[in-house]
Length: 106
Image 1 (cartoon, helix red, strand yellow):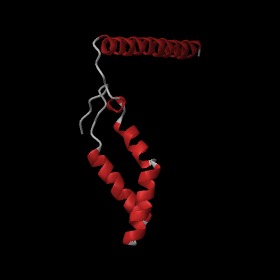
Image 2 (tube, rainbow, N blue to C red):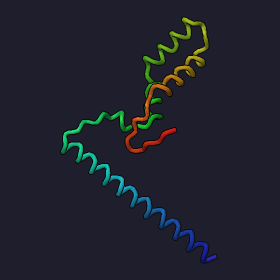
Image 3 (cartoon, rainbow, N blue to C red):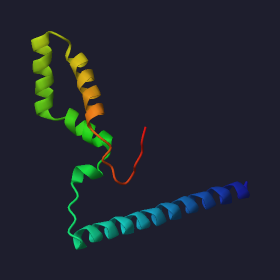
Image 4 (cartoon, helix red, strand yellow):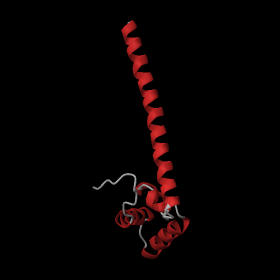
């Protein structure tokens, strides 16, 4: 029983140290990138650092887009939810992968 407790404590200590170590390295890398961009006067748009999901949610939560969805649904006499799904598909096609930190391709 004592070995199980020691094992759990060892794993917990390892995870705490790992989290601290990784966050320290991540912060150091972000700081160095930011300093490099400032030093070389490189302008990087903030949306290029966002995940695609964040951009998609920002667009879907925009009041102008929401009003346009309602207007379109009323004009065409279709369900708002159907128009919402269609808009989500359009956003999925339009919003490219801008995240420079994680270059994942489907």
